[in-house]
Image 1 (cartoon, rainbow, N blue to C red):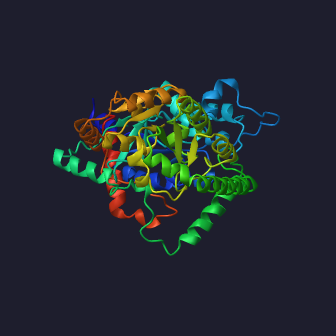
Image 2: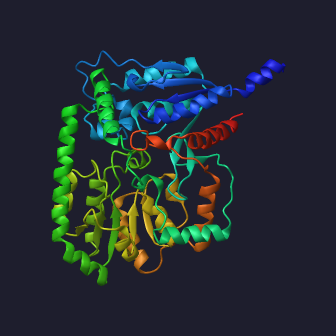
Image 3: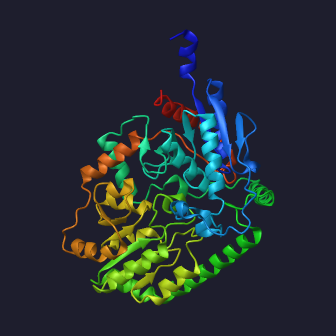
Amino acid sequence: MTLLEEIKRDFLKLLFVENRYATWVYAAVAQQLEKLGHQIHWLVQNPVFKPAFGCVHIMPFPSNLTGKVNAPVEYEWLARTDRGVLHFGATGAHYPHYDEQVREHLQRIKPDVIFGEATEFHELLVIRHAKAMSIRYLSPNVTRYPADRLAFFAYDTLQPVGGDGSQLSDAESDRMLEEIRQRRVVPSYMRPNVSTPRNLPLSKLADKIRITWGWLCGERYITPSPLRKLALNAAQKKARAQWEAQAAAQIGPWTDLKTSKTPWVLYALQMQPEGNIDVWGSPWNDQAEIIRRAAASLAAVGATLVVKPNPKSKYEMNERLSQVVCSTPNVVALPHATPMAEVFPFAPLVLSVTGTILMECIFSGKPVACLGKHAMAHYPGVTQISKPEFVAEVLQSAERGLLAVATAEEARNLLQKLHSSSYSAAIWDPVTKPDFGNIIVVESLTTAFHSVIELHK
């Protein structure tokens, strides 16, 4: 091998997949990686967010969808996870167009590594082709626990790739676990801003203008129309009010549950749209259906399902969910303002899909039933179930003390593994936390990206 070939081998062709403001974060890192010699490419679905450097590949909007109202059968897997279809009224008729675009671009670019989220439909199409072409696709995500770290997940899974290998001592791990149990540690994505940027109102206005301009230019597959957005927000507000009214009427039953021996299960609603449940949790991303089926199963054994909403609830709070909760006698709805600390310690069993509460159960040695076949379902102390109806059987096992829970050693080992397979870095929201993207943060994030890139060589 010549010296020139040796040098070229060390430089990789990196492809970043556009996803609105995540693209701005990637751009800060990509500029540094470009200085190191790597070749930067972008695959863009929404031209409003196209970067100003590197090789930019814009996928044109489809122009031949007249009369096509549904996704072709072969894309049913995508429609089940696509937030555009699940929440924003998209039909999926655009899938074949973008599928072909993605295939052609990947064949032409031939990237060594692809970076992108695993949330939007075009990213999921890229992942599908990347797998078929044996191209590594890495999705950077903030960790839940340990907090304030970054993990790269493989493709559309929860399986981490790489990590800085740093080790938490047993003493450090035990101290961190105790802080998690006492709720003194809050995952970074759950924390409110310490201070509100003075220009935040202007940033949010600019965001609305930018998103609306993208829609006017033709981006109709991820972005709902302004009228639909208004309707969604109005429906969510109405559903939330109905929920609070139902919760207020059930304060007595909830108080009785905490002090009586009546069996019950806790289900914490996950916010939607969110790749955490829409993609990683698929096919269990219809939470109203989960609640309906789980409650029916529990009713047969005289048990109750207690549902705690996310304090920042979005479109999972809808009319269908309200109907299920209000029409099901053995479902107790908790107010949005209810602290988890007032619920979690009393729960005999927790039911979850991909919620952070699942990890809290492991770290607390609490029984937890999990829907799905993702990585979290295989964590120690987790009882994996294939459908909501099995929760009643799991509850009965928990009541008899027959359900395996994570031991202190297993909890410690899991936390240490999650720490070593992640990086000391962070991803920020350029709209609400624009000042977070400072030199130090970008440097640590670049180090993490560069480290995981090195694994490819």
